[in-house]
Amino acid sequence: MSRFLECEIAEMAGVRADVGEDVFNRWFDKSEIKGRFKKVCMEEQGLRCCYCRKFDNTTNNLIWDLEHVLCELYYPQFFASDENLAVACKRCNNAKRHEDVLRPQPRPDPGIEEVPQQPERYSIPHPRFDAWSDHLGHVNYQIYSSDTDKGIELMRVCKLNGPAVDEAGLDHESVVAAIKTQFFQIVGNAVSSPPPDEEILARMAWSVQNLEDERAAMTLAGLAPKLRALGRKAVRRNVEQSIAEARALADSARNPGGEKPSERRALSLVSSVIGFGPPQPRLPGSSP
Figure 1 (cartoon, helix red, strand yellow):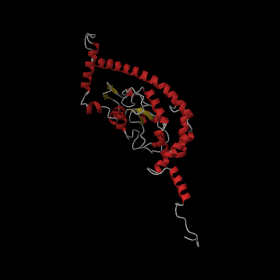
Figure 2 (spheres, one colour):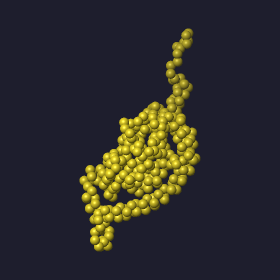
Figure 3 (cartoon, helix red, strand yellow):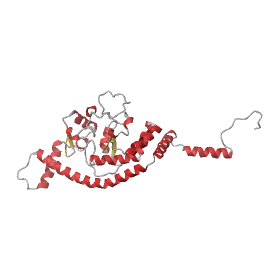
Figure 4 (cartoon, one colour):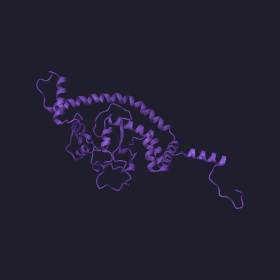
């Protein structure tokens, strides 16, 4: 089932048919449809990045990026395809950039018409077609590990261990030690003998996950009425107006920094009235 509303699907189809793919993509990138869709993804993903799964307790569209799993550089035809979209944190989105994750390579004909829905067609876990936890493990979403090709590739593509390892100089042992310290600060003397590291990590992960899920639930409860309001607004939106907006984008691309078409028409009219229009050819025998 599409996460786009039926009225949005009709609106996008009308704009695409009128202005073509390139202008449509630029229009979609600025559209209210994209803004609403990002919030739908936030709700679906529980305010977690589709790649690193880190939690960010905000529904601000400026904080989250709309991620194109198959990047727009090589697959512009999927720029507004439901199955190709998710929300990602800016760090993961910037790290992945134009990485082509479709398999097999070399790249197939970019003219393919439908987003492949088979998980094996992707070199990384797909946000819609794969279970993230089947491919990656983590320690406090700081140190990531994997024993699958897809998970290892995602770690490389999005540099998942970059912040902890490359930037902070941490390693698995130091992160585990910090979590153990935090664990014993919380439980105090309630534990007669120290449990194994794996149990400590699991219990702390469960505690953090529950806390983040509770925070997400409260934030998303406030998002629900906003989504309903955006849905009502989408139903009222005029397709012709959206087409006009897309055509205006096309005009601005043809005349970057120049006069708007309406300004050119006004200047032409004024020039013809006051006699400063373009030179007219002289008729034979006419006086200068």
